[in-house]
Length: 102
Image (spheres, rainbow, N blue to C red):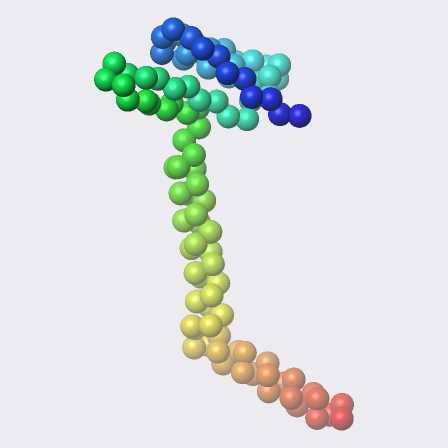
């Protein structure tokens, strides 16, 4: 069962220390840490989010690899002239075998 824990601290330095402690406990397998983040409100009122894992970079890399794989597969199957001739040869063979079986 997952639990969400929220801590309120006085300074960004204390929040970093709490995050470091949680990561150390996760390394010792005393805590199962799926994700961690801390939020800071600056003096001008803006909110900054600090995450332990950069999800944007992680997802962009996997998206690029997946897109390249699918693009290559579709290109080889449908857009490659030699691929088209292979598919047409398979179709001719199937028709020839069907005539023999009939």
